[in-house]
Image (tube, rainbow, N blue to C red):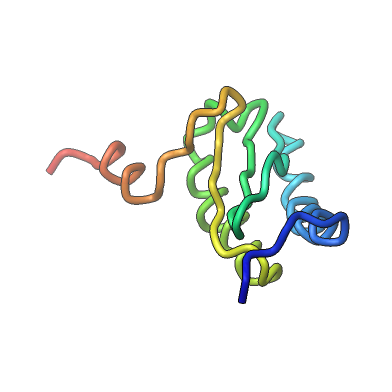
Length: 102
C-alpha cells in the first residue's frame, strides 16, 4: 500500500478523531492540531496547557496516537510536537525521565 496524500477527506477523518479529545483538552486549557502529513505520518501539535502538562505524553500515546492508528488506516505513525516544534518525547523517554528513585 503506497503512502496516502493528505486529501480533504483524510484530513476530515483525522480531525474527527482529534475532536474526540478536544473537550477534555480544552477544559484544561490545551488543544491538539493536525499540522502535517507526509508518507503516512501525521504530525500533531499539542498546544496551550498541553505544553506544560505532565500527562501530555500519556494523552498522546495512549489516547490520540492509539485511536488515530486504529481509526484512520492511512495513518501509520504519529509524530507529536509541542507548539514550538519540539518533538514530544516517547513513552519510554517519559518513563525514564519520571522514574521514582528505588
